[in-house]
Length: 255
Image (cartoon, rainbow, N blue to C red; front, side, top):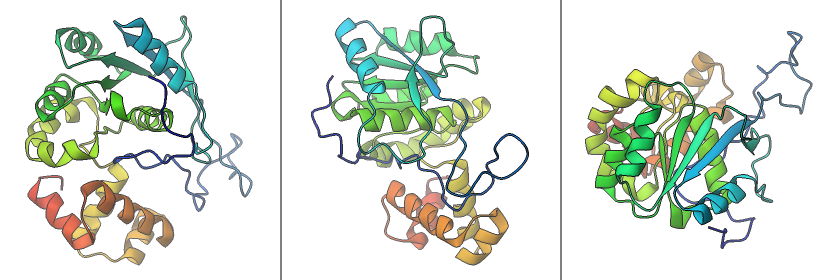
């Protein structure tokens, strides 16, 4: 599963880079004081383990997780491969299809706060994707799209409790994912696909008629950060502007 693309390639799909907000001054150095200008303090690294019935696939994904490319987002939380004695934050499960073995791996994680699962699957359509989500799969990545940068970004998102899917699956699943959100994801404290809690908060305020300045003031972000979040929303929902984003979100039950 080596990455056939150059390291500088930006990862495809609805996986925004896990970049730090340069206007965010809420981080501290551990002494109760804001961090020095230009520095961002992060929690410890995300520890990820890999499980597969195929040792070659397991070795390939493990190598991807350990690869830091030239396009690694600045300020991103580090991702490290968990050691045999570590308790991983994320379990990357690799399989050819959403089959009985993969579903059994997810079932074994039910009721446990960690590790959270990320699935790397060879054959993945909307039916298999929904089956995996309903079984507790947090995020799904097609094996053919699994570059090192993309996989590390999805692992970071999973550590934040954010679920991710490939772009082309979103439109076919959004009409069906409401039930999975209510019955499966919400009880586990996870966010609905494909938006993060921060993005949903911004979208709800847009739907209520708030402008960028009001949203920034109410959520304690800079206006530039809110504009970036709006761009993320429209990109991930595949729409052209805020109005279409609100209409889409209401129609699909996201807000």
